[in-house]
Length: 155
Image (cartoon, rainbow, N blue to C red):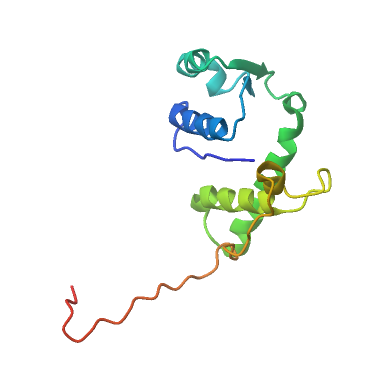
């Protein structure tokens, strides 16, 4: 599961292009992309012409028909719940939802899933994930600056 938050509703073509390039490096061929029929992407001529140029089929689902989107809706709901819990627990404002979503997606990728009997990270890359870099989300972080020497500039 990957997430790419954007600042606007304009089709994030540079993000889709970057993601497709990453998948190509992994030898994954994308044949189709599924979006909401009533969403901004399905109505965007810029996005549809981008997909035509890449020879990718655009599949649309009916509006408010999450059951047509298959298995992806459950992880989205799980991550949304984690984001709400992370923001509430840390006491941070909703302005930090984007960072919370990235942290929740990382936690999701590194968590064991009984349906596949491994983590999604392990299923994709074939190795167990290293989680030593993970920290409690929203915790206080102290930045340590080395003490300047006696004759060093202090500006």
